[in-house]
Length: 456
Image 1 (spheres, rainbow, N blue to C red):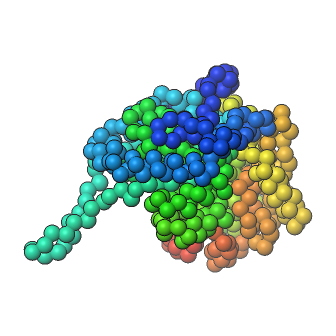
Image 2: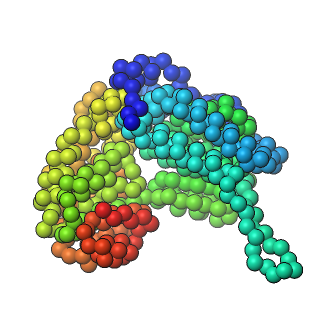
Image 3: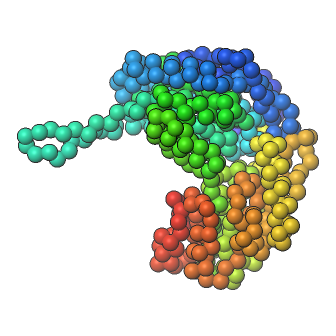
């Protein structure tokens, strides 16, 4: 079901909605203690969109203090699980009521195509929050086998103050993935959005307060990683950090934990994920559809992007022809136009980085078969979907996470070579395998070192 407005309606909404700019701490919007702000940009035109509170140590300290107070006095942690569920369900109803506003906020700040946000991201955000809300009064404690003369209980308790460090590629969805389970369990939460994409998180926090989630329970601290994210990682009164982002920064949060209170750390970091297509893969049209979606969805700004197509030489030409045919239908342009499947790159820094990788691919001898250029459009940061063929596994574009709409095609001659190539990476996040042989599917999926492997 389509949940879209027209381009004109989205543009009208973007010109009329109030843009949130203050950090959200203890139930209300606040300026940073220093009074400083930072600029956030519209990637579709390169123009300044808003000025957001630039939080630092004093603001983090205040947020942690208020979150701890809320946890200790039990206003949320000790509330009956059914009541927590009801408040979160009401939050979801408010999100659904304000879905068009939220979609516009996220699109104009991230460059993501509005049709993707409206039809996928918002639906996944709501599904995640609703699912975890329903678990609040349905996950039971346990008794342990201890003999007839004793009773041993396994009791699930909230951990305390949880910091959620968000990436810029799926702002609302990642907030739901992290804050949803933390809130359902009774924790107090501090969200630190990426500085490129703060506004949807701020608006979600406002709606949570309106839904009855008590002050201090859900806070949003805005700002840069070194001034707002690092202090959360180092804070002795934060009990857990959930981080999604680059591997480099993920390592820092492990260090922050070691240097402070040994807080729990959950990381989701980078990926250079293989899509392995073997010689017996059936229905190359379906394979091409999956491969195209897997690498170009969200402009390739996706840690689970299948950016390495490892394909058997017997089917490579036929598959590549089908991918080229499909990707030409992926229109790139104004993110607020529902007809566009690809929007703008999130920032000038990321835009320059992707273009540098494309130039490096050319210099190192990869064969450019599609795209490879920036798209000039009203000062925005747009890049053509790009495909390199005959990529060697030692090339930079085959080894480093580009986080952009760039596919590297690597040719192999057999199953063992495919597995070796798939595992020739510093990452191990996700992978895909296409084959018609069930035994081969299981063997290859088990042999590939990745957290999630999809088959066909």
